[in-house]
Amino acid sequence: MNKIDELYHALVESNHTVVLTGAGMSVESGIPDFRSKSGWWKNIDPLTVATVDALEEDYDLFHEFYSTRLQTLGDCRPHDGHRILAKWEQKNLVHEVATQNVDELHMMAGSKQVDQLHGSIRTFRCHQCGSSASFEQFKNKESCSICNGQIRPNVVLFGEMLPEDAWNSALHHIERAELVIVIGTSLQVYPVSQLPQMTQGKTVYINKEVNDHHSFFDLIIEGSAKETLIAVDQLIR
Ligand code: NAD
Ligand code: APR
Image 1 (cartoon, rainbow, N blue to C red):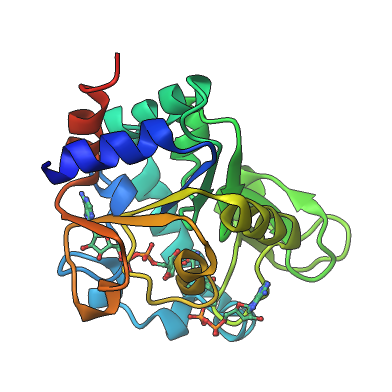
Image 2: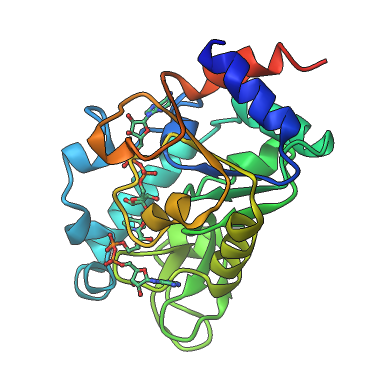
């Protein structure tokens, strides 16, 4: 049996399937990832832009980085892979998507049970008082209208706690999962990197780059997120 057939059989036989995605899931929608050769962190040290210290001590650099990321998102749309995951949820083949991505492409594609483990770049708040803020306030570098604080996107910065509800929901699904499909993530960032080893179910890794750190997976498919999902979907009536 080839690997696509093996993933198809695991998917249709599983009673509880979790999909864990990272930046590689959005690359085919035109959004760079972080650690492959064309990734964000090839030219920028994340600790200079994606930390609370960076926000508080060099807001202009922080603002420039996240404004650039927002422009890159621009008119990026979900690809067929995102839409297939949403369709599989409707067919009761996928029960949760836990994503490290902040681009909201899974929801835009129609997935309903999505846990955004690293937050969203599309919504904003005051860093000091937590009040909701708008994209316009962030874009115009306005101060918080309540406390005069700094407006930031709702992404998890290095060193910050992950959103508790999202983390607890992902843990709940992972612990019940009979199948965990991990797509487009290097699994280098804690604590999400630990999730695939916290399941009793079958684990599948779909990624462009595979190394020894991934050898614990039951099934490894080295390749494109979109093309792999399309190939499996063609077997589903
Ligand atoms: P780290 O070890 O510094 O931080 C891991 C964070 O996860 C810590 O703040 C820790 O408190 C938290 N954590 C650990 N266990 C947890 C649990 N059970 N529940 C909730 N939170 C828990 O790792 P890091 O590499 O510095 O990254 C920290 C976070 O910032 C990661 O989620 C990373 O992906 C995120 N980040 C986001 C961006 C972005 O642009 N969105 C950029 C860089 C990093
Ligand atoms: N199909 C499959 N895999 C792909 C594709 C693709 N089309 N394009 C890239 N990849 C792979 C890359 O080879 C890489 O191994 O996706 C992986 C993306 O890994 P990272 O760039 O490290 O992104 P991610 O794992 O999501 O990073 C985790 O780190 O900086 C923080 O908060 C940020 O959420 C992010 C976290």
